[in-house]
Length: 219
Length: 223
Image 1 (cartoon, rainbow over the protein chains, first blue to last red):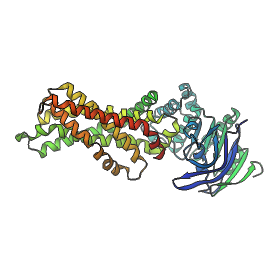
Image 2: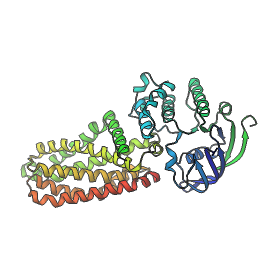
Image 3: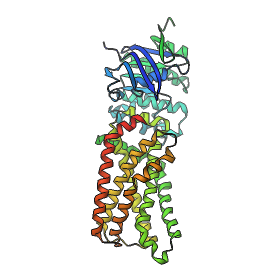
Image 4: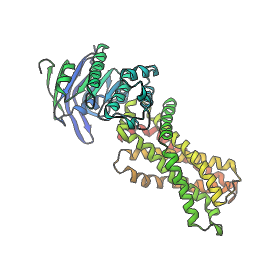
């Protein structure tokens, strides 16, 4: 089976700065890999490179069979990135934001209702403008958009941040469900205990490189 | 591409309908510009009615700057530009959608400003066809160029102040041609004199809309 992510000596630039300085990494479908490392280690940059948002300028970088050095746009519809930003429009309602993401991504609009229900946004909240949501509700809305788009690769940057206990459990449930469907999940988190319990493998990053790889139960 | 354009235009127009920035801020600003010109130029000496076409298009030009800035400020919040890139939408569709939303807002504004101009400056319209074609072609040009330069400035920290510096010199031909063509529609000159200017406006619009369709992807990646 072809890996969902295959980076070999990949260098990615953030402006002129090499945010990834020769990354070697492979993630298989149905696998959860946790990225760990201090701030500035390159975790977010790796997630953004996998989403086709950072240009890979040397080495090899394939995501879902797409060569990122040749065509970064091809992969974007097939990944779901939960980043520091929520990609929400303040003046659109929760439902409108999710519906726009789904229609833009070419996913069935029938996915919207189940996604809103799954994230607990199907009541009064669906008609609230994103600009009036709490941080946790915004996170849930961004997640609902990802769930509704049903991507083949989940890229989660600090997915538990800003969520209450129910929300954190919800994230864990979504990750388990994605893996059960054969989707790959790459996540970065400082919440070691919770994230390690999700991951099958841990990758430690420093200075824009992968420094250590270990099974989750060993790390 | 057209499906993506309709999706983006619908999204931008829905945002404007909900936020009411266009109706509560941009339109009053443009009307205020017309009123200030009326105060500054003495209406008794006939200056206003002769200068009406130019003053109308100056007001539209200022309003178009605000509309373009607004169009890209909604993408700047909460990582919107990354969201657009991740959406998988065709960049040409994004360009046409954003430009299309600006066109519709400006056309509505021009109807409003046209009424105010006729009332404040005492300028009856005699060439409705010429005036309609002038508004359509000039607005397409303004929106096309505005969307290109709006995207160019979008990734910069000083985008609010830079955009007018970039855009106003570029759209100066639109101001000139639209003013001359409108003079034909208002009987200040003849309608026959308006047609070459409308052709110039059409060429400008085609150039910028084509350039935007071709280049917007690269601009979006660099922003």
